Image (cartoon, rainbow, N blue to C red):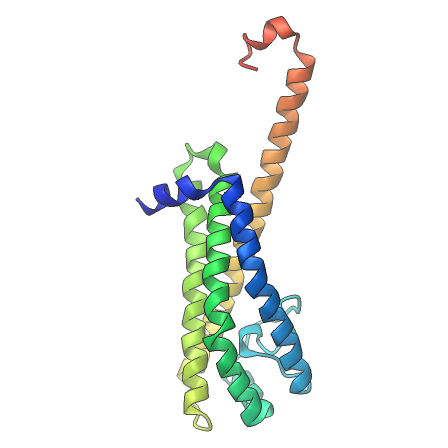
Length: 206
């Protein structure tokens, strides 16, 4: 039922609209993370595993990594991470989820017969959303308990960070692959239309 409702929304216009809506908080989040990285002397947000912004390649974090960051940030840095988690990082996951879901449903529409592809188009972004919000809860718990360590929560947070990164990357790769396949299909169809004589187009369904 949910997939059908989302599929009805997955038009080219809605995909572009959700991309524009998602772009604003993502841009703001990356601007803030770069500022935070500079302010703390090269110790980025936990959401980015200590990196400068989303373009920085990171491999996740362990409990020791997490608490090293929390310590380096100081009181002001921990407050800023808390502020980020409760504001911008409330908006980024659902905006990203909506764009990725509608875009994947749109590009996989020609393959509607393969139901697993349609299901995957919704599951990948949904898994990303769950992982991201789960990590946010872990971050809030770590900051609230500081200076006491909750290593179990930090370990879960690191695992959720890996989950959100993997699922979002896979969703983007699937979207790019789907776009390439659709573009190739359109080019082939256009070439066939140009090559087949007008009287034969009806015979070939062109």
